[in-house]
Amino acid sequence: MAFIPSSSSSTSSSSSSRGCKYDVFLSFRGEDTRTKFTDHLYSALKRKGISTFRDDEKLKRGTFITPELLKAIEESRISVVILSRDYASSRWCLTELTKIVECMEKTQLVVLPVFHYVDPSHVRNQRGTFAEAFAEHEERLKNNIGSVQMWKAALTKVADLAGWDLKNR
Image (tube, rainbow, N blue to C red):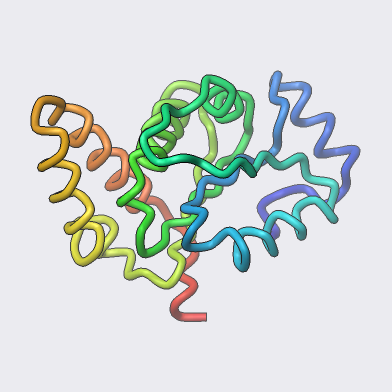
């Protein structure tokens, strides 16, 4: 991946000079990509000496996003968001994505989307599995529709960024 310095010394110095603990924060839906794509990407970044945060805990449904995870986003220079088929069905992923967009706008966090075998226009316009996921969120969170609207806006902003479309590779 050419967007990140390959030597560990330049990576470490660039991270520390901006007060960042991590060069890269990986955002992904574990059930969709953890054991294949995300593991390979994480391993490749680590081999290059790139400090990478990946949440390895088994997340239980209904649990709250941890402050440590949100802090890791704040302490990263780059976030690679792996947008997969069921990414939007996870409230955890969407909360994480909202924080990523907030940091992108406030602290110049660089956000690099990867469209993991999903059509970027489906993500951007919330069609297909993305539409289904948001319909479920709207049904479940009738009293908190503001969160759903923030998630939709964050997803659209990230999908509008230049990224990698794996379906065509």
